[in-house]
Image (cartoon, rainbow, N blue to C red; front, side, top):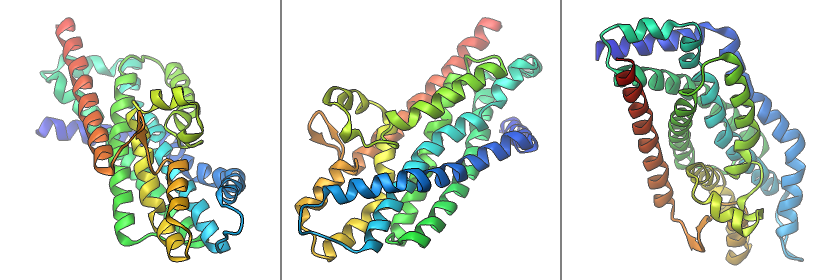
Length: 299
């Protein structure tokens, strides 16, 4: 246990010591929030207004609340994974500069080494993502606040789980990388593509039926939906209070991926947590197994 804690401390210190890596991870959510607000805000606004049947209107403040809640749920769903790929670079850097040889020569279990990288990257990712949550809550307070304390706590739980998921996923992918160039290439691909396949940039409901079925097998999809549900719950509650029919609210929930379907069967929120938690556990086990197999081959 002392060895594990020492390695976690070493890995975490190295991440925060690399100012370029730390600040690039920290500033990414802030830049994304600004870009989302500037360029996607009007798109989301038009999308919401187009959903409303003729004769049904709601206040401008409520509309701003809808837009901001979708923006912050999209941002957090993406950042928890993309930031993990930045904070988990140390494992590849140790291989690139051959530091890994010193670590593997020492009487150190492969599982301990694997978990030290994972837990250090998770701690770094979580710190950055919690900072992003703070920025998002400030943005929501300035545009249209409808979240309760329970919603905020669930949002923090979702961030915690998605950070675990992103770190586990990046750990497995980084296991096969050996250079800074490979890290940059993979980071670019993940940053560009993950937001689409998890439904953050564009709701899954707008994809083709075949693609929706494929995406329904991806755990990140359910993480995004959890973020959506807890960021937007208060807005939907206020819509109901303003007299908007329940069937219209349900249509909006389905359109915004708050209601997710697996082959036409609606997935409850508890099941979403089970899927995400199961995926995290499975990815971590695979990651540790890969390190153990590699260690045996070297030995």
